[in-house]
Image (cartoon, rainbow, N blue to C red):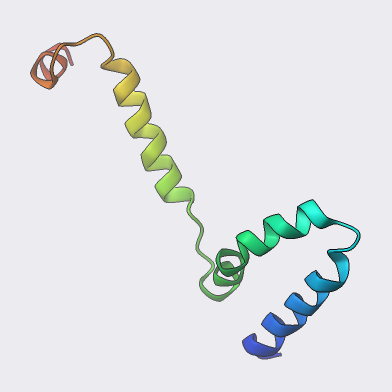
Length: 75
């Protein structure tokens, strides 16, 4: 099955089930391109999420330091 055919059939199916699962289908429609890209490339945003979580952790650890130089000296 080609990608274009699968893309079209999935959209048709979404239009059909939207009557029954309106909230769920609107979420899928919002992320439709990302969902389709996963099946093409087999990549996710997991790595980026991990980096963002690490940055948030560093920012939490640095809370209370008046500037970055003080934070760097403490660690």
